[in-house]
Length: 150
Length: 150
Length: 150
Image (cartoon, rainbow over all chains, first blue to last red):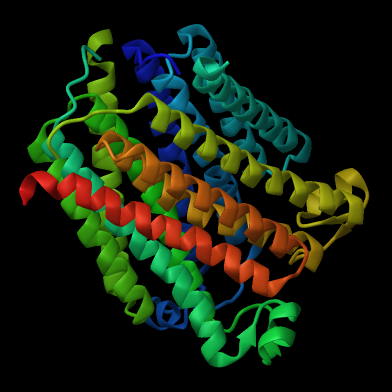
């Protein structure tokens, strides 16, 4: 890595993408809790006693699905965030960074939508788009970081 | 975003909060393993054979509770860390950042305490405090990032 | 914290370590999906209907093992990444940072290898190496951050 040229516009694109997707993931946690409340089905005995419902462990499918979509989000958010931080710090080009962020955002929104609506082909496609965006920004960032060693 | 003014004092507050909460989360993983050992109840057949205990899958409730508290920590740490990084980079005010960090730390400590002691109302309140801190720092960071576009 | 002296070489070491380990974690997600496909055993009813297999919930052990190795990766990647970011920003020495990154990488690769090959002692040792690397870089980063207060 030669020097650090942090682009304000790239930071803005990357930051807004990450914050929006992190809030989307957080929202899935809220859906998990809200669905337990709606179904009066609680994973913990103390919640069932407190809120007057059934103690159900493991969660019913409607609850577990939010949990799995949430977990899948975190599994993808962290690698993209890690790679993106180094991509920005290493001075990656704005246009490519914008494409990676856009593709990742589209892929993850499609994935969550498809997961919650039980559309498996769309879920796989959304996942694949996000996956490819992670791989692309990771390899690009790694290449930028190693430029000075070559 | 106009320019980057990274505040050393804000970086210190944010950094110490994040490191302390990440170590707290890590400690829950240690508790999971230690509780399996104490109960001689192992999730993997190879562990039961190695350490001389029972092969129990899924984990007993005492173990699973640490795992869920741990997972909940990670689900909240990542969004707060993401938003906080951009908040600091975008030059957010120190006083507001300190409030977000303090509220988040209090909320997460209360959440873990309440989770492990099966106190559901306190757990919900701790979660809610942390949740509101994430939403607040996220919206504030997004606003700071987009200032230059308005 | 007195000032920020971000070392390009440390950023490169830290960045390449993080990107490589994040891609390793991501690969475990791919293994989870591929193993479901190979066993024709699907966690979701819609996948079983779409791809012509059995609807099996929870996942069979071969699938769940990838999932647990993956989860364990994320539980450790996030704390190390958080501490590492502040270590680099606070101007930690390159040599110590390189040791932390190297130990963490070795520990996590050993952990994943041992998890997938059901070798519990090696899995524990790999975990412990990674754990100690997290604790060391966390305490070092916290000390660097607080220097200006002492």
